[in-house]
Length: 326
Image (cartoon, rainbow, N blue to C red; front, side, top):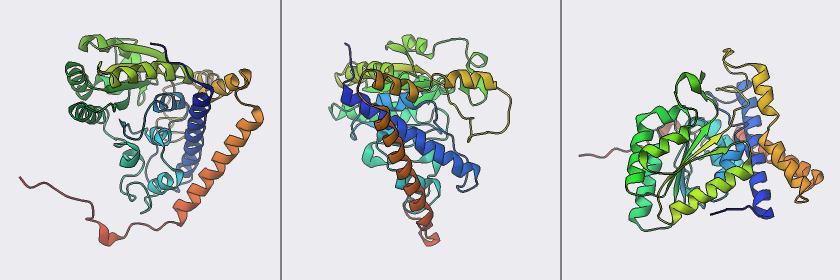
C-alpha cells in the first residue's frame, strides 16, 4: 500500500510543523528568562514526526506523549492560548494549570497526556487501542516515545499485548539518538529500534524522521493497517533535537559537539519541506514567510493571554481530585 500526500496535505503538514517550531522557540525563551515555572523539554528539530503522523489522525483517535510533548499537542490541534496558559500554571490552561509542561493533555482532541515517566504513555495508548477494538470502532491510538523508552518493560509489555490481540496501535519511536544524555550505542546493542518488532510479530519500519513526506507515507501505511484490523506497527523515525535535553542551553553537559548539532541542522525538516513546496510550485517564499509571521503573532498573543490570565484559586485545590474506594 502506497500512501502519497496531496498538495493540500503537504501544506497542512507544513503548517503543523511551523506551529510547533514557533511555539517551542517562544516557550524556550520563556524558560530561559524565568517566566514559566519548571523545566521545558523542547521539540525543535523533530517536527516532521508529529506532523507527519498526526496528519492521518482525527480527534477521535488518541495519542500519548512523552516529557517532550508540546509538539504532539500542537500537531494534534492544541491551541496556543490554552497551551501557554498551562505552561504558566494558569487556570485557563488545558489542565487548569495543574499539569504544566510534562503532563499537558486535552481529551477533546484525543490527547491522553504527556508523561514525565519514561515509557509511561505506551501502555496507556495500548489500553486506548484495546478499548477501540472492544467497541468495534475504526479509531486508532498512537504512542510517541524515545529510543530510551524502548528499553523499558512498559514498551515490551504493551507491544506484546498489542500484537497478541491485533490492537489498532501505532508505536512511534522518535529516535533522536539520545536517552537523555546517553547515546543510543551506549544503552542499546542494536542500531534500529524497529528490529524489536520482530520479537512480537508486528512490522518494524525505519524512516527518515527529518523528512516529513517520508514520515507521512510510512505513518499512513501503519494507520491503515490499524484501522483495517491488521494490528500494530512499530514505526522508528530517525530524528534529532536541536536544543538540549532541557530548555535551549541545557545544563552545560558535554555529551555532543557543536559540529554534530550543526550538521543535523543542515537537514532542518521545515526547511527541507519548504524547499520542496517551492520547487514543486505548491507554495511560494512569500506565502511561507506570511505563514511564519501569522503563527508568530498567534504565539505572542497566546503568551499575552497566559500572562493576563489568573492563577488557580487555592480554595479549589481538591477540585478534580478523586479516589475509588474499594
